Length: 299
Length: 162
Image (tube, chains in turn cyan, brown):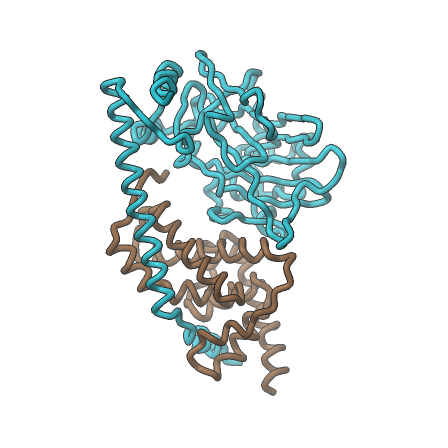
């Protein structure tokens, strides 16, 4: 059979000029808003850094880098020695592709009355194909899916009553109500450029929700104290997670979502001080004292 | 790592004009619905503005746009998977040649992973290794998808035309 027919047929599809114009118009609107926000944000940060003067930053843009107490217990998994506790993620992780550096167990659990969330492991992309191949996997809007050079935090979420975790609204749509942030001890900042909520992918099997959070961009900070805040809300900002004067973080006392916060380690050889410094310089990074002043100014 | 970046307006216009038809084709065949396809195209270009990767070449840029568009379409498809959607007639509004309609309908009726592989291979002329890179799958997976996709397409095509 001559498959050229597919080419000629598909190539006959065209957008209307109106559709193109609408797309360009919307893009330009977003661009002009981005310029405005970026300019304001930089200017305000500059003022704060140099003059300790009035700074107003939209609350939505300011999120946090956080910490939990407790020892870090990451260890490397040899290929032929899969710890029994992470057998639970065999459904989605290719252990057969693993080498000594590609899967690192974390195994930290948060529970409340309704959910049990376990940060199972940090898994390199080459072992995640099974996850992304799974017919039930939902690759969210901004995610690029699996790639061998990516790093994923793999978590499981279970309802304590054994029911399915995900639910769909009346239109069959999956509400986007799961969020995560990578946090660095001692800093309040806007982490949206480091990782964002859209880099999350979900796969539910037998009422266990497997979650893959793309944390690749956090690798440059691998020699700092890192934390993963995970919750059933889209937004994690400083109203939800608070930092104390020692740089430790906790969820706000009245927070009504899942307040899961895990410490973890990345491969410190991936730390890149130059890129990390570049990132920190590119946007506001506040110590406790600086942030208190910022809050006082806002009030 | 990407930092703050904003694309200049003329770059956006140029990129939309150059690639929107290609992206729309892919999204429309995957989603079988023009409104969803237009949304997927829009979101692809928004990500282009916001993520602003540094492209090594024009080919790199094209492949990145395809990757984002297919991911977005797949995401939309999965989110609406519990809905009953049968809107293949909608496809015909954007097909310039009437002879192409049944071919596209057959292609669009295939499962997503097969039609995406077929489109990238036969329409966009990508090699298996390049499709593997774009989709984040292994070459062997892509070969199997092409093989199965061709078989499914041919069966339906013969049923329709022979």
